[in-house]
Structures are given as C-alpha cells and as structure tokens.
Length: 94
Image 1 (cartoon, rainbow, N blue to C red):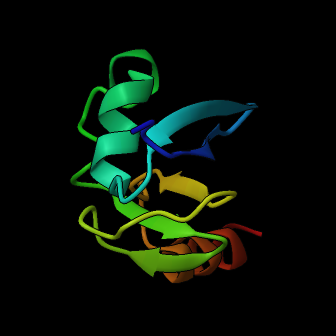
Image 2: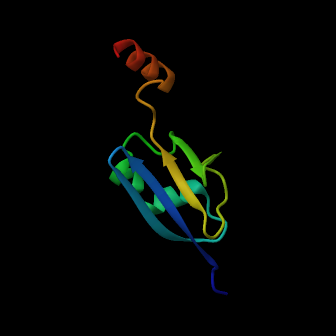
C-alpha cells in the first residue's frame, strides 16, 4: 500500500525577508514533523521554532496539531519589546 502524502508550506518572516518552504509529508503528520523535516530551524530560527508561537493561516496552533493538505504553517518570531510600550516611547520621543 502506498503511503498518502500531503503538501504544506512553512513560512518564516524576518523584518526584511520572508521565506516560504514547501514540504511533502505523510498524511497525519504534525506541525512539529513539518518543522523538523524542512530544516527551517537550522536555517532561520536557531532559538527553536517549537518554542515560538505557531499558526496555521493566522490561527495559533500547538506543535502537535495534525496537518491537512494545503496548510500554511507560520512560525512567529518572538517580540523584542511590547508593541504598546514601543508606541509609548515613540510618542514620548516625538
């Protein structure tokens, strides 16, 4: 019996660059499986993408989430500072 495969995209965005990787995985693979198979951690997220926030089409998911064909896995970078605090600083410095 031939194993069924799915195709998903992994997205990692840096301030000046966005990377899109397409990977094929066995059906019932998880977000963590896709991250490991793609090697995106070694290329772009040395702090560990499994500790980062993860999403599929903008909705937060856990690394254990089972993927469907066509899913778009998004790896969110950790914020360097609180966005509200950054706005306060900019307003104060203006």
